[in-house]
Image 1 (cartoon, rainbow, N blue to C red):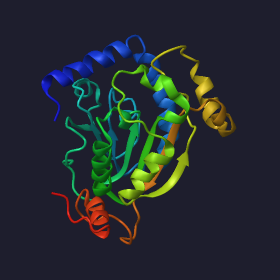
Image 2 (spheres, rainbow, N blue to C red; image 1 turned 120 degrees about the vertical axis):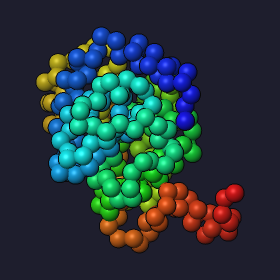
Image 3 (spheres, one colour; image 1 turned 180 degrees about the vertical axis):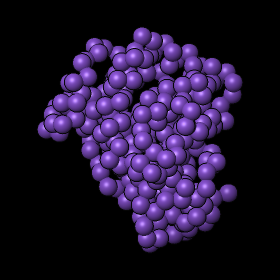
Image 4 (cartoon, one colour; image 1 turned 90 degrees about the vertical axis):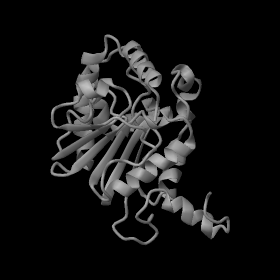
Length: 250
């Protein structure tokens, strides 16, 4: 769990980074949420992983909505129908097995301290998702952002659509969608384009390879137990070690 100083650092970083952009971000996310709604059952349960300022979770339609983030601002900005978990996402989640229909995350996994934290987070998501539930992730693709990736001080883990797909597969997910180029890199710097341009962009997938620098990866938890992780988080990692003759981790 991050210390109090760490949560205060998060507040300072994001207040500075997004200062003067709040209204524009809300407009953008209302459009993006309508696009992602096709993978979120309106009568189901969804968790926004790394919810930040809650632009996604406040706008998505779902019967039960959860948000997870260490930033204290999330508590203040979440809608009244959103349950907040202010915790380290690599630690076990306070949810039952197979409770969620979807986990959504945007520009978050790269902020985790290392790949082990990413692996544990994906395993937690697998455990809490129902069979047939989806893990939906967008984020900067290091293949296309290159040096600009490091313009953000709190970026740690380099990911591509292939490396994230591999990590999801290792946790038991089947890969439903794997797009190397989806959205442009960032909304937090540069020009604020008219929102009609975003609607047009989403309607024209042929434009994505030209401008996209973020991946879109969707993993689905198999409905059959064959090849899937067992009932405890990280069990897929343990089983792989045992098959390799390395024994159980200490």
